[in-house]
Image 1 (cartoon, rainbow, N blue to C red):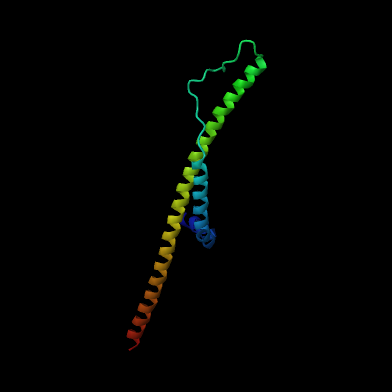
Image 2 (cartoon, rainbow, N blue to C red):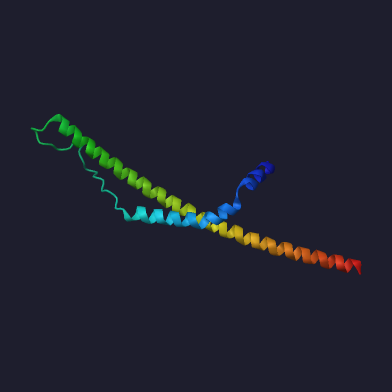
Length: 130
């Protein structure tokens, strides 16, 4: 089981992930700022099922007005979904940036520990040979 995960982790191009993490975070922030600046269309909750039209207007006009009202509601719903999606993308990008920072810190720590282990091993060998 662990062998499968090891193969997956080894196949990930970590250098590319680490190099592109700041770009991903900046892109998510730009998306968030672009979406947050756009005002949401107000949803009319008390809107009747059929829009009010003049009694002498044609049924085609009434159908077009009903369709326009339905489209406005759909656009408003889509804007809300886009806003929620951009919030999620921003949060994931921030988490990714934090993860990359921690991975880099662990990599540096491992280098120091490796160097300390090599120095300690050389000292033990030198003491043993005396």
